[in-house]
Image 1 (cartoon, one colour):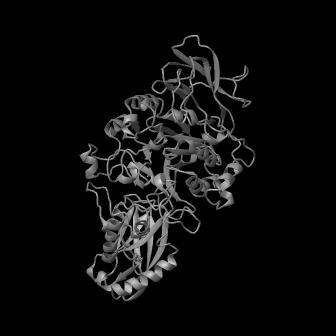
Image 2 (cartoon, rainbow, N blue to C red; image 1 turned 180 degrees about the vertical axis):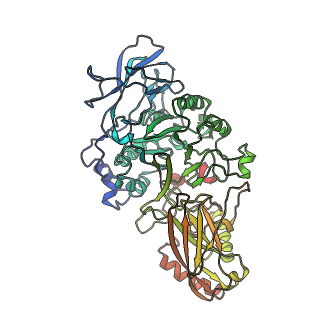
Length: 640
């Protein structure tokens, strides 16, 4: 049975664990290992459980209290906090004037408290927020990764400590969401630590809100939860964790116990908390189908959770900002993902300022309320009622592809994005968001390439080679920045711009050789059309690297723009300057140089020269053996 290790923490917490991990992956940056100074309001503690005999075994009782001396114990001179929501996973009650609550006992439940704005719950030695108690009298039974030990009868009381926090009351908040860290081994733990997780450790702008891990935190091997905790212990705020399909006990009999190990090590599968003027909700959108189905699941929000969500939202003003985070997104630009999406949207219909955030698909999408797609209509969603963001992935495309100059896999995603972290930004009544690519500044928002007939022909051959398990010689690599005069004259060669912050109402302009800019066309405008899919709707920059190594190519992207390259350009090198403006007025500019040559022979010669200078290893692929490729072979990878 798996027992979680408890790691001692000092002022330089986690260095020992990170040093151990360096055996498996290089430590690239000292700042990735040592977090900035934690905020003063972040305090160590735990939920207080009085194991005495309950006055009524059918009622779960206790107090929410102001832990003034931060000892996690309700002392005689400490006051209860009124008006705080407490839940048994279905029912939601508010504490009385003395901070007391009472809830019906359920045989298998997690009792949790909703942290109000202006307060902060304690964290454990790994910075994981402590706001819940599992009640499972007989325990999980014999699960490979431990599950929940028997908790015994209803305790006399469970008391929830928290302290006052000026920081969590502020209306200005930055709230990072890190989805799909999804490490399958310790090497990939090192990649995460030295990539997007290290970036978060270097930041000091999210202390009150903390970091939300959006599921698929590991890759089926729940013993890696220890290492996951180690690297996220460097965060500069509380860490809250949502479950994904790869965080389940796949030897559980049914869905009711599929997250027992998760609940034991991280907390409830669905919960809420308030920061500033925003109400955050986490839901479990994965329904496990049982042991006999061998890791099979549905993307679905259970009826029990929808009932809880209704009860939870009764305490929230209807005009409030609400963020509902689910591992599997409600929908993407390709399809409706969650089976009972209509039922979910019915529950949140009266909350117009709700935004839903998902992960799971390893794509990065920002779909705006009011958009329409034929695929959504076919699934019963005529129009997107609430903005849906898909948060990208810490692992990118499952740590695939060759290694870059920093020793990290390129891991370009199938929709032309890179590994990174989403941050929701709140300023009173306004919300914005940004996607920060691993080891890059916030200004890194554009990936540019040239999509020509010759490139599309090569891409198709490269895909066929990949589909045939790379049997025979690979098609000769070409550069996506070389185009023949003949291709230009055909009039179907485009400059493509993958705009990571881009929504359907963003604006992208392209200027060739300093001339007057033209407005680029969005390839997935969301006006009721069907999915635009094919090599002509693909970003050649990221797709080329993926097709040469082990990444996947989806042949569509929700954030890709294209502008036709003038057909009369002279032979030689030309420059395209792209200026992209997001829906909040933020402007990003980047240039790319491309070369026009006479024929395919010259294109081949020029391509080899450019590819050697690009720094990509044309033949390098992450060395994996046996089951180590499970991330790329997973169900969501295949559907992506």
